[in-house]
Image 1: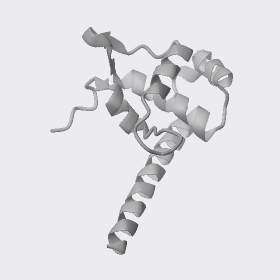
Image 2: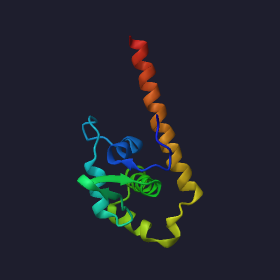
Image 3: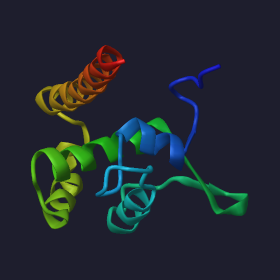
Image 4: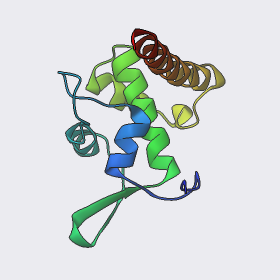
Length: 122
């Protein structure tokens, strides 16, 4: 059974949503999210017993914005902080929203293409 979109997600689930990987491309990378939490005051996950982090939809969208600006647009952390601190930017304009969706679709298509290639090799 899948969680609803509005349900809180664990850090592991968020890593999968963002498709974060280590530099070697192997296991999931949770340290990136923890680092971004320290750098960006806009990220405020719920931290419950056992120091487990839980992210709501607002935090996940903020993480997507950060990832997009850092990875796709090549901005620096300082530059992303400026953008996120700009009141006008808090509501993403339609172009940036579209770019994030496009990047997510591109990642999914790449995965599907790799699966099809692997299946053909069998």
